[in-house]
Length: 161
Image 1 (cartoon, rainbow, N blue to C red):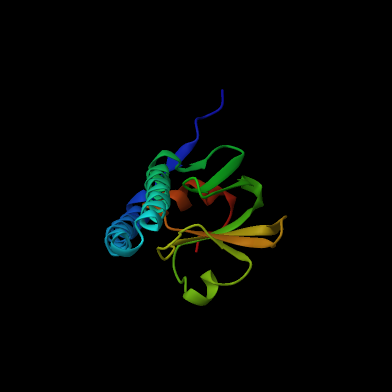
Image 2 (image 1 turned 90 degrees about the vertical axis):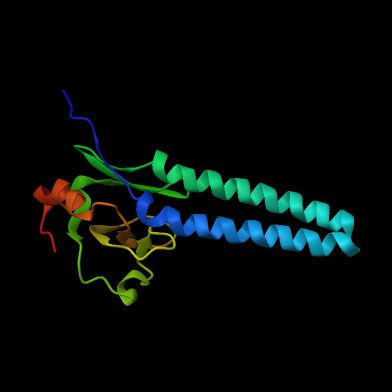
């Protein structure tokens, strides 16, 4: 019988900053509505409706960070950023997991997929071969709540830096 997939959360490092963004968006919505409603009430109403829809979408996206954790199964690893992005990688395709020495230049490289969204990543998963797609991704950066446990779960695969 197969073992269940191990789950690793990441919402504690990413969600607070996104909630700040949602609060700032709410303030902006209220101020914009108040100012526009004086001169252009119909435009204010339409813009407020669009902003409210965007705000609801953002709140649902933030909530998805908790509902969609990173998974480590026997044959594959699923790296997720809520409902924004999900990448499935075969365990054998992972060359190394790096927990320290990450710098902005590494994270901003074109071949690195940053799933940490607006937080600075604390894990870099290096792949043996680039993932196929529009841009060849050779590494994935993420901000996990327990990076050491994630690296330990993948340790039999290769070196841990």
